[in-house]
Image 1 (cartoon, rainbow, N blue to C red):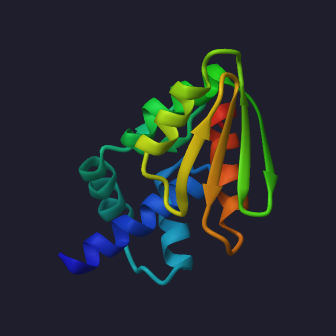
Image 2 (tube, rainbow, N blue to C red):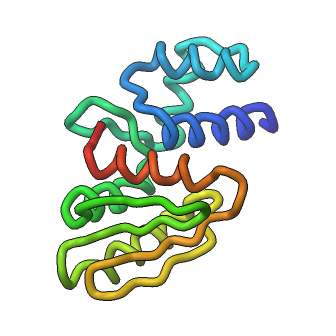
Length: 143
């Protein structure tokens, strides 16, 4: 049980960091991180975790679907400065985008502040802002 939970945590991180299109690709990523598992095991994990495939063919966490919809519909651009992300949105939509970002419980995102068309996301120091920027851009573009 403990091993399964760790493997599923690793799957969450992989899905959020990379564009995974197949179970085989997920098995390969897990093996690169030291998890010895089969495609059947990964298939069960996908079902247990409720992973979904976007129309573009990439896996996404079910809890990220709302976030993906909000980002793809309302976000115009994502900029990074050190441990801060500036998410530019269509006018009047920033508070909803900020709520979706906060609600997704993204690791290393400490919180956000929004205006009318801009969201400032504060990220833990240590290079995590780049990973979070990549995730947001992936969800914005659906790829």
